[in-house]
Image 1 (cartoon, rainbow, N blue to C red):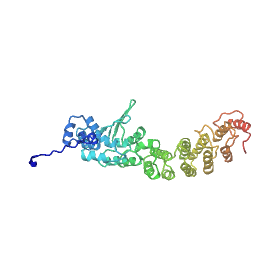
Image 2 (image 1 turned 180 degrees about the horizontal axis):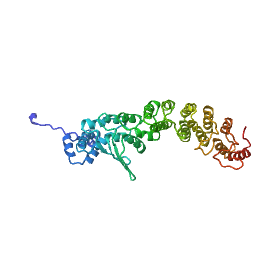
Image 3 (image 1 turned 90 degrees about the vertical axis):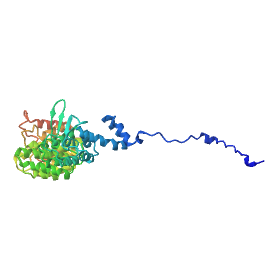
Image 4 (image 1 turned 30 degrees about the vertical axis):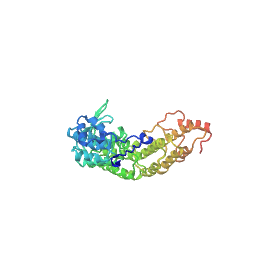
Length: 423
């Protein structure tokens, strides 16, 4: 038998049960991110601008592909929403997107844009929008490229009024109306002032709106020096500048003595008693104690201001107003006593001096307080007033009385209640 013709077959081995259960591996189906760029750009032609923007927001790859197209089209058609976003949506005070919109896509840095997402502000220049959001670096960048610091910078259209503010107004309005107010406004103010902005508006707003958590003398001093420079324009301008500067310093600067010295060394006309720095400082201490807690820097300011009271009758009339403000306040008794004692010791102004705009003397106010006090009244303010010459038997010309003054009657009532007037 020819064995070479015999074909020997070997039975095929059966797969193991485990192998039979193992699925065949396969690649995932391609997604939209795997499509060629050419096809993606073709598909984008069927989308609206809003749909394209939504698609660009889904991933970094689509953002890099579609956002430049959107920005270029936005600038070319004159819509300028991308330019507004470059200011409003920037990370902090960055100029990165603003540079790209202007230098790469050809936006005009002097153009106006729609002000979406802002309270009552309907439109603004790019500079005005940067000022509104407190972007000092963007503001300087735009000013260096021809933006107008002097002209109208926005349109405010509320149900009650319409206004076209300038760039400095926009800084202050933005700080009042918008939670994203940027950092310290000093750099913004200085940038606009250096490019010709009319700074008189600051004299009306400085103390009220110019505040932030970053104020130190190094950033406040340039604004104070500017306010002093305004004092040479006219007596009224000088008074407005110094008043605004003092309000700002006492309200915002933690250690105000340096800035106060700059203001008070300026040549200024006589200031009415109720606007005097001593009165303002006392009021600032009382307000801070009522709202924010004790501020030792303001007491340093009062120690600096009190000895500067001179023989000018108009200046000396301010001190009784300060006495009354102290005794009328409800702040910590220790602080009230410190302020009253400091002024009585350093100014030499008698506590019984009458001021036409004062309705009550400090002594009468203090006695009224003690009459209404509880079982443990604090006598220190009364004692220091009496020590420096306040007369409990004196009748005051502005107080109507019968056989004796109301002050004496109040004193007798208080003595009867407490049994302790002190000598």
